[in-house]
Image (cartoon, rainbow, N blue to C red; front, side, top):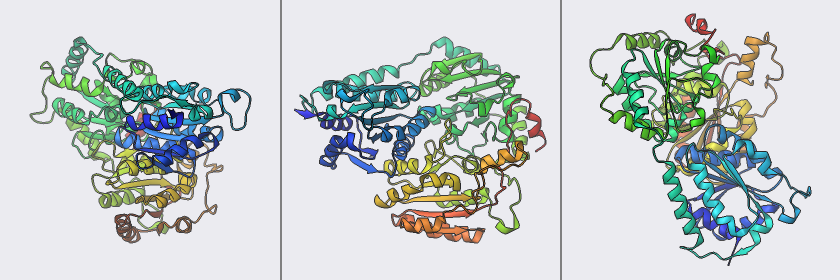
Length: 581
C-alpha cells in the first residue's frame, strides 16, 4: 500500500522526471515528505517564489525538449504559478504543474487557502485534472505526460487535494499499475506522431515551390519543438530560399548562414521584412502568424502565395488565409518533402536575381549595424557591443536566456545564434521576470552548458531574489543587466506615440544598487560603463563561472537607446518606414 504522495513520486520517476521545481506549503506537505524520503531518486529545487518555479520548469523544457515539472501549494501558491503556465502555453512548452488543494470535503466551501485552480487555468492549459480518487492518480500522471508532449506541446495542471495525497492505495512496483499506464502512454504518444498529411499535400507543396521565382521561408518555434532544424537547413539550401525567423524561431537556422535574413516583423531586419512583402511564395514552417509579424493582416504579404506547415490544424487559416498547407509533424513533413523527386534542386549555379536582391538588402542595412551613437557619458558602450563581446566569451554552444523588453530584441538581432534550443525567451506572453527562473531551469537541465541571462533593470527587479537559488545550488549562471534606468521598450513607445510623456517608466534613483544587492546574495558583481571595463568584467566573470559560482555584470547604457527597426504594422502601411532607414 502506497500513499497518494508516494504514488505521485513513483509515477513521475517512471516518466523520466529527475527534477521538480517548487515551493512548499500546507496542502503539499505530504508530497514534500515523500520527496525528502526519495531525494536520492528525484531532485527538488527550492525557488524563492512559485512563479519562478513554473518559469524554471519552462526553461528546463525549452532547453531539452523534455517535460518540465513544478509544484506549489493551494491558494496563493497555485495562483502564483499561473503566469508561468500562461507563458508556457503561449509558446507551446510542455510543463506539468502540480498543485495541492484542501481536502475533498472542503472543496467549494471557501476554505483556508482554497482556490479553483482548475477553473482559473482552464484557458491556459491543454488540459487539467482534479484528482478525487487516489486510485486514478497514477493514470492521470501518465496521461498528463501524453497530453503535454503530444501534438502541439503545452502545459497541463494536476490538482491534488491533501486527503488524496495521504490516502492509501495498492500499487505494485516496478511492473504494476504504473508500468501498465506508462506502456499505454507510450503507445498513445507514438500514435500522435503518425503522419496526418497526404501525398497530395506534399505534391501540391512541391509544385508551388517549383513554380516560385521569389520564395521565402518564414520559420518559427515549431521547427525547434519538432527537432527539425537540420531538415529546415536542407530545404532552404535545396530550393535556395532565404530564411526569415520569428522570435521563437531564433536558433532554428544559423544566423550567419548566407541564406539567413534574421528576425522578421516589427523589429525585424530590412531584408526579412522587404522579402516578406516582395516574395511570390512564403513557406511558413512552425509559425503562427503573430500580429508582431503580420501587422495588418489584410495587408500582409499581398504579393505572395502562402504555404503553411504546422502540427496544429487549428492554426491553419486562423490569422492569415493560406493557399496550401501540411498539417502534421514538421520533421516528418519536411523529410517527406525533401525526399520527393518532384521538388527541384536549385542549390547549384550562380545566384539568381532574387538572391542577389536579398543580398543587396542585407548589405544595405546589416542586421548588426549600430543604430545610433551612444551618449558621451557612456562612451562606446552600446547594446550591440555588449552582446557581441559577451557572445565571444560564451562560445557557440551557450544557452542564452532573456527577460522581456528592449534587451530581448537586441539579443535576437545581434547574438549569432547557431543552434536550436540556445535562445530561451518569452515570446507570445512577453513575460517580464521570466528570465531568471528559466536560466535556473536551463542550467539544472544542462549542467555542462554555459548559461547566460540577458535582462533589463526593470525585469531584474522582478526576479532578483532568485539569486539565492543560484547560490544555494551552486549554479554558475552569468547575468548581464542592460541598465538604462527605465522601462526602455515602454519609454520608446511613449517617445514615438505619446509625445514623450514618460509616465511611470523612469526608474532612475529608485534603486536598488544592483552590485550591492548581488553582494548581499554572495554573487560577484561588476558595474561597467565603457568597453575596457566590459572586457575586464567578462574575463573575471568567466573565471568565476568556471569556479562554479554565478556572476553579474551591470552594463550602463543610454536611457534613450532604441530598438531599430521599430515599425508597428510593418507589413502594411509602414513599409515606407523601412525604405527611409
